[in-house]
Image 1 (cartoon, rainbow, N blue to C red):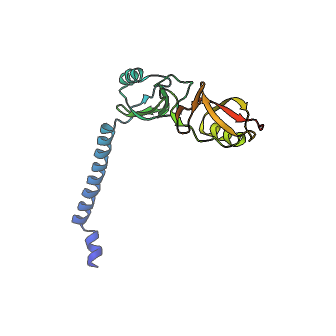
Image 2: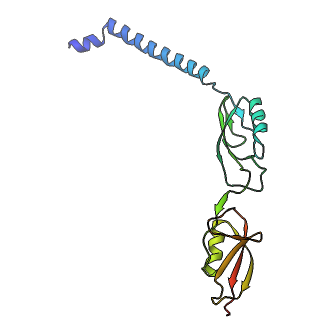
Image 3: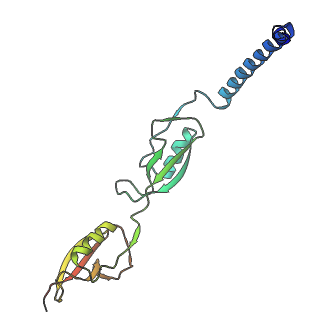
Length: 183
């Protein structure tokens, strides 16, 4: 009976009420502090930065109290100007708070350089898909006398003979010289 009498005693009930009031006061103070320190209800619309160069991006984001970080230079896209924004995160129109970072992906200055594979000695049927899969274009096909029909004898780019391993920009055109099966 001593425990039940203690729970209903005047001193215990006073201590319990004081504890509840203190907890409620701490919760309200914490919520008030968080509201002020996290800029609650502040909303800045993210501008559309697509096709802008970095100088314009910096100017536009400075006006909105936002920052940017370049995270990548993507594969070259001919639809966008060189060194312009291709992608951004968060997307245009989304809302953020001041001094937040906008992550940007830029368009490089051109197609990257890739190595020409060794297709000399292979058939046309093997060589064309290999070159196309890597990103090259197959240009003119010419034949010269050679015993093996449709065997790649030589590769050329802009009239110059290509050696395997030579670096060319992606989408470059490679002309093939094949054997005609005579001799």
